[in-house]
Image (cartoon, rainbow, N blue to C red; front, side, top):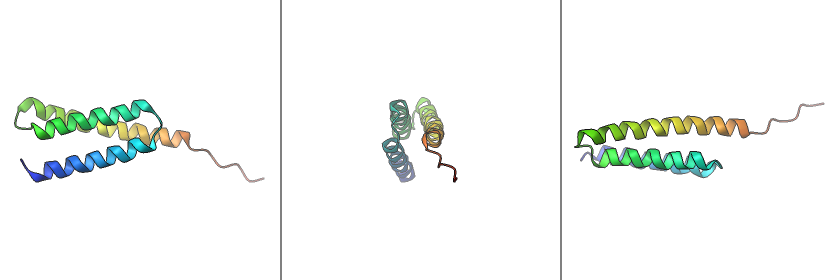
Length: 84
């Protein structure tokens, strides 16, 4: 198995953990876990053609979850009071 797959899986795990730690929404945390789990299954068993789809599905879940987390963080930011 190519080492690049493992490096990319590690980077994906690192990014998912950092993002999950910063969010308070349990659905987003669960989505990060599911996305990374699907991704790593696809990486580990990429020799089986169906598992390649899991790799792509996990990547898509991670991308969408990161996007939703960014939007969630922006919505929850407090806007500064207007100067009087």
